[in-house]
Image (tube, rainbow, N blue to C red; front, side, top):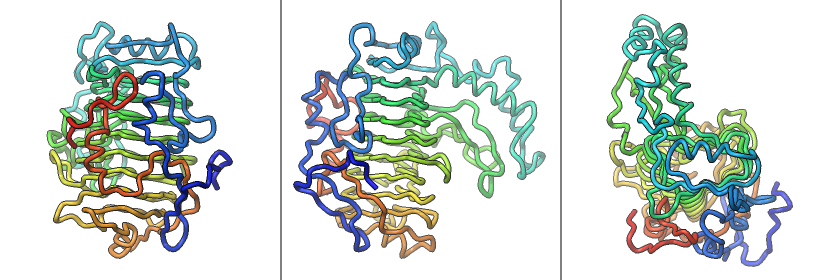
Length: 458
């Protein structure tokens, strides 16, 4: 049941019906973020607006908005970023302003590091690894072990030490407008931290040099990589806003096949796992990626209260999101399922492991040969409620379409009522055009307002 902080004024409240029962009751007329942010002191010191998704619950999410003086850092290199995230008190508010695109696969002097650099001295080589674990010799009943697997893991840890950066509590990391701010090949990890804001950053080609072969993963085995562009692990009160996530320029189409499977070097774009809680993901752009967003690390995960609103998913294969266990609210997102750059669509939303998902007033662009029944998937235990969802401009009952074509049904009712819904629009018709101008990194100014919105295309 909702906590007392959810008890908002009754004025202009709506009921979203699904399967004959009330699934949601959101306050309408709340000011959308893009406008309310104009009242903030500046982009770097802004806090999450009231009622803006699950991250607004309780004390809300302020990040490093109270930081001043020596607690405000401007960084343009990997070394400066790492120092800014570790200098001084681990819990005092801090703001990290990222200026330009930072390559994280470099040494402390800025010299680029490649996969061979990380593998040097470990004894690992891809040729030796492939020879050792070829299913023709190793078989398919056990995961790799022994010298080459140990060497691979050591090389992988070396890469992680450079390109994975931990974010402490009470921190805001924000891209400086007009500088193309972001991380190239890097991963921000919010692990067991509270009150974090990540905004206006472009994450590109977060890749693992050393994927692990697992012959027991599925019927034919899989290559599994580490590193998400943004990873929330046991994190609470997190706001990820106006970021861009993409595999470009290292698209999956360039990945070779080894042991008959794609040698996958990318993992998630934004994963929310290990009992993370009270998260709002807003106005982000996800493109050219496979396993996009995992909510819940296993079927036994806990908490996982997450809101996704006004995001764009384009050229995404799956997991937009895959939800387990928690209470997940999706509203006013645009899903373009047209194949793009070799990323062939599989599904958008998966509700499994008893997840309770409310999806309302979202917009799907589905190519002519696409099937509405493929927009959802599940394991037979999850639920998804909501209304006002459009598919190619037509109001569509997503659950009914899925259940008519699949034996493992998705329940059309949920056991909770989301009310933290700032900026909810009760028509999804204009989302492709409006989010084409307002979602992703690079559209905010230093004041936190939107830049000109007539120059950006979807």
